[in-house]
Image (cartoon, rainbow, N blue to C red):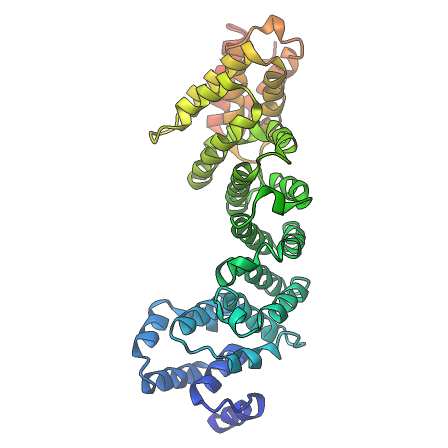
Amino acid sequence: MGSRTHQTLEELLPDLGLLPYKFLTALLLLNLPVLSIKAFESVLFKGGNERLVRALRKQRTWILLENPKTHHEGVCLLVSLLLRSGLITPEIIQSLLRWVNSPTENHRVTSTAFLAQLMSDPMLREKKFLKPVLRILEERSHDRNSIVRQMAVRGLGNLVYGAPEKVKKHKKFLMVILIRALSDPFSSEVIGESMKAVAKVLKELKEKDIGSSFRDLTQQIRTYFDNEDDALRLLSFVLFGILARVTKRKWKGYFAEQVRQSWVTLLLHLQDPNPRVSVECRATFHLCVPFLGLKRLQTAVNEHLDSTAELKPEELQVDICRHLAKENAELLENLYKSTITYFCSSWEEMRAVAAKLAGIILEHTDRQRMKWLDLEHLLMSLQVLKKDPSPSVQLVATEVISDICPGRVLGD
């Protein structure tokens, strides 16, 4: 068995002149058994790389590499550590490039993951590999394998680290691929990776650099505000906040309209079921409020969000309703109509938050001026929530009904 493995190595790998590199390439491309990993470790030890071997073990690199579900992450980690140790050479890169179009999916996954991590190192630019690797990653972003697509997108985002001065030069190329990946129909991992990559790229660009991609990007991001995947929801709020910082003149009017369509969602997600998402939403909501153009409202919101103290969303909601009742009835109507759509949310926490906010809107505004309010429809909707599977939702619905119609018997 051992001799046959070594024969395979000799057949598949070019003679790079150094034994460690042969083992390295074999491990990456062939995902060979533990015996080969031990052999590679032995070679590293003999080459004086004991610290590297300890780092590989400590970060569970070999375990990641051996598991097909985490192999690509293992490759990225291995390449990162090898780059720090100066053990990646142009010869190794050249050797890996031949595998990116392999009919074998494992080879494409490994080689694309290798290049994705390599994009974060200046070596690609210095050794004139940058352009061909960018073309390869563009091609792999269409791959039928979702992990290959994910690694291709990660590589494009890593350009920010390997050659930050090249981001503006390739901005249109990058945005086209990354925005397309934001709507990947088969993989949430590809979508999440694209969001991370877009966040990196946007930090290197100004509003004028984004160009017409701004519109598509903003609309795509908003579609994930209510996604059931916590990671996608969190990243969508991060990206929307970055856009709020980037927006200055050209897209200010358009972005303001997007904020007007989204601000209720942001307000409700201040009480997101996931605490990390809630924290990120708070930062984004703070950045977006100025686009509503209501200075008094902005002052009230700032009093709640500027502080590092724990946010009290209900107090914020009360202040917002008071100000809108005085300043902007249209926006108050938007607040109400958007809020009741969350009565049907799949998350019990969001149903409870929405019912409570609907009650706050009614409590702090003049119903006679709310011509658009269909009170009977609201009561019917709250009665449905009164029978909700969640006791917390039932309790909120009961309290709001009681506040609206004291003494009213349910079903009257």
